Length: 364
Image (cartoon, rainbow, N blue to C red; front, side, top):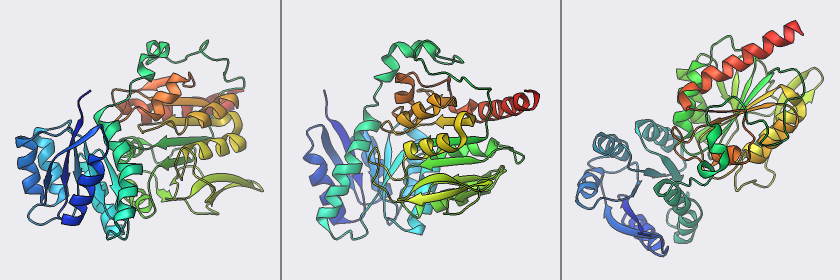
């Protein structure tokens, strides 16, 4: 199999050298060029076409956001991974780069002068994302369950089923790679009179989750908050798990409130979708609607199983509209979904199930 060709774009000589050295150690990767500015990167993309680009944000002559915008005009499918610092400004700029067409991001260590930390970040985060975006895994799509795409049910695949009257009292969404853009498409279509609360786990570090909540709120009809301990979970609001904290729900008297913790990561993630899914299943039982959107890995799959066992419903995003079909694909491969839908239909289906569940609960 040919090596994955990588173009490294960063104005720091040190970072370019570290990235080149570390990426070149992987037998599946080949650094085919480097660039110190976005303008140089544009010419390198044409001269020596890469399979993946790693892109800094703050650069002279042409910054990373502008470079992403220009690359997308001629190379709409070329994977671009932002390599940015962990700061409020960088978080906002990274989210803007994702909105302009970047596929994913990795944060640089706060001490960029530490070669050991940078190399660790490259090995543990950047290289897996490069491989996932350059060579999408399609194992789940080749399973027998692929024939059920778009169907309303996969009954018979597993013994799990909704044994109680259908009702939705909470929507729980799990998402990772490609998530900010996916949420930017789903959340603005949730109406302001949404009769249930929405909880979201997006794999992101601290600072980024707060910026994402603010960005989504500006585009949405309902307020979207970064979850804080003690927040009362009420209809017509959404909460995003804060970076580096698992987010769960607890019952306090007649109210349900948020709680956070720093228990060990699950699926190498904190926050983890599985943690949140198990928590809502414990509190809300069969009245949970879980949605698993684009993302690497299989976080959310085991939690979706718990939700199915409790009688809840599960929606998985389809492969064609996912940036990476890891998370929703693992749910489908396990036969846990009730429906598989393109991203453009997710918000409509959420509200259809919420309204239908409410109508049924009134008539029962």
